[in-house]
Structure formats: C-alpha cells, structure tokens
Image 1 (cartoon, protein in one colour):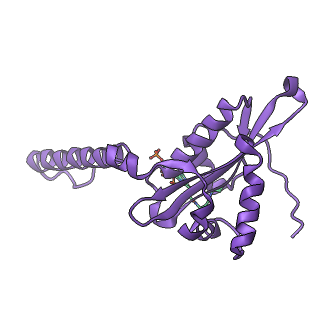
Image 2 (image 1 turned 180 degrees about the vertical axis):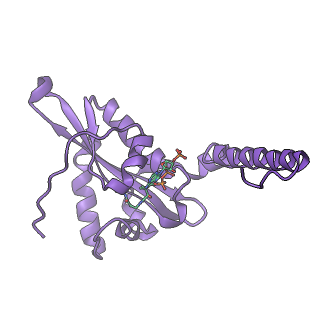
Image 3 (image 1 turned 30 degrees about the horizontal axis):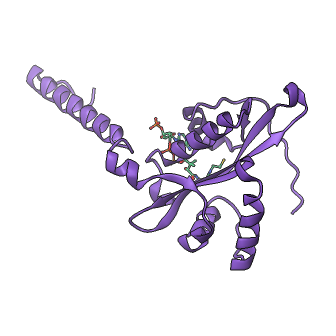
Amino acid sequence: MIFGRTTDAASDSAERILIFSISVLSFIKGMQITNPNEEHKYKVRKLQITDKTKGFLELLQQLTVCDRISDEEFQGRFLELCAHGDDHVIYVIEDDDSGKIIATGTLFIEKKFIRSCGKAGHIEDVVVDSGSRGMHLGKKIIGFLTEHARSMGCYKVTLDCKEENREFYEKCGLEQRGVQMVKYFV
Ligand SMILES: CC(C)(COP(=O)(O)OP(=O)(O)OC[C@H]1O[C@@H](n2cnc3c(N)ncnc32)[C@H](O)[C@@H]1OP(=O)(O)O)[C@@H](O)C(=O)NCCC(=O)NCCS
C-alpha cells in the first residue's frame, strides 16, 4: 500500500496512479532499442582500424588497465588479430551522434581435440560506456558474440565475470557453471 487507505476514493485514485506509473515504465522499458531509429543508431559492427581515434581504448579503460599505446602498436595488434579472421572477432557499437565507440566485446574460438575436434567460444572484454548503460547495448553485444560462436560451429561459449555481473549474463542467456581459477603474471 503506497498512499495509505484513508477512503475508498483515495484508494481508487492511488491504484490508478500506480497502474499508470507501471504502464509508463513498461512503455519506456519497451522503447529500449526497439525504436527503429535507435536500432539504426546503435548498429553492431566489427572493430575497424580507425576506431582508436573514436575512443575505443578509453572505453576499455572503463573495464581494466589499458595503457596508452602508439598508433603503430594499435595497427600492429589490429592486423595480427585480423589474420585470425572469424576465429577472433571484436564487435563494437558506435554512437552515430558522438562518433564514439560506446560498447564492445571480444570472442575468440578455441580449437580442441575433444568432442570430435570441437570448438569452444570464449567471450572477453565486454564493456559499455558508463553513459550508455542500461539501454540493452551490453545484451546486444553478447547476442552478436554468442551467435557468432554458434555460426562458427562452437558447441559452447564461456566467459569469466565478477559476481556483480552474474545477473546481467543470466539475462543474456548464460548460466553459472563451475569456479573461476586464475594466476596473474603482472
Ligand atoms: C556489465 C555491463 C557490460 C552491462 O551493460 P549494459 O548495456 O548496461 O547492460 P544491458 O542494458 O544490456 O542489461 C541487460 C539486462 O541486464 C540487467 N543488468 C545489467 N547489468 C546488471 C548488473 N550488474 N546486475 C544485474 N542486472 C544487470 C539490465 O537491467 C537488463 O535487464 P532487463 O533485460 O530486465 O532490462 C556494463 O554495466 C559494463 O560495462 N560494466 C563495466 C564493465 C564490466 O564489468 N564488464 C563486464 C566484464 S565481465
């Protein structure tokens, strides 16, 4: 009971306000990237060599340590990754208005002997710009990465994350399995 129950009329009025508020919230939530213009505005594409000038590294800094690198270093790594073709992809979303990269995620494919020479997809480096979170851009990036893994014939796709992001990945269709182990060298 939000507004108290002093009279039946007051109660009816409170109920109507509550229903109206829920309708408005549902409408706003439904608008998230379902508006055709927004769909166009927030297209997912592969990383391009010019994205260094569009804030790609600054976006990664919101995720973890990402020191400044020279243009030559960026180009060198970019070309190295391109040589892996569809086995190593970095997807991004560019905001057409600002020209900035506002979301990214990586997928690389591990080739195995198990499962009849099966393949597993590994998702890494998922981040959405702090000013653009909550608009389903992260979910969109994960959707592209998982579909890419499926289309490449992977039997699974996995990732490591902090507990605080578990619910986000569950909403993206992944489920918790096992325990993460790590040893850092730097
Ligand atoms: C985690 C992150 C990528 C989510 O991106 P986002 O674009 O804000 O998420 P979305 O809008 O696509 O969220 C999809 C759903 O998950 C929910 N969600 C998002 N982050 C959540 C969180 N941390 N905890 C619980 N739910 C979350 C959203 O509310 C939404 O729910 P809905 O479908 O019911 O509306 C973003 O917060 C981020 O970049 N964080 C910092 C970097 C980071 O931690 N990256 C992950 C490394 S593993």
